[in-house]
Figure 1 (cartoon, helix red, strand yellow):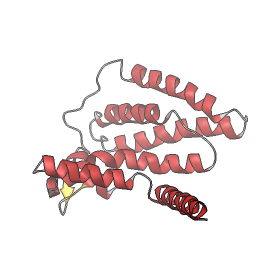
Figure 2 (cartoon, rainbow, N blue to C red):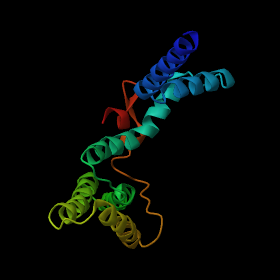
Figure 3 (cartoon, one colour):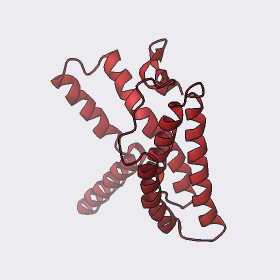
Length: 178
């Protein structure tokens, strides 16, 4: 009887632990890492460091939010990074045009929209597999970005919307606010 009770208790505690891990996921590991970094570096738990982390993570968070909807519908999009690169190149090129440089943001959004519509149309209307479509788009759009940028680093030292990546409002970086 005691062996059965011990086995049952062990099985129940294992199930409880597995249920807890499914619920909280990697949060305990993240907390342990934060504690470790806080002990190693005195500057880890500072407002400036958290501001930098939030600023650097903000673009990936926006992309991940969009990818969440794609994954929830059973799809996959491998071309997100390439579309981001193409949109950035277009934005920088348009930003270099005098008097209409701020339209670079709209040009980037339009670029993302066009490539998204192409991918979505191929998947929804032609019933092509999302993996194949977005894998092809990953390569094609990356190539298009390189062609548009003449296979060079595209740079604009007088970027009219540089404040979005460099400035803050009430101490919060613009990238986080947006």
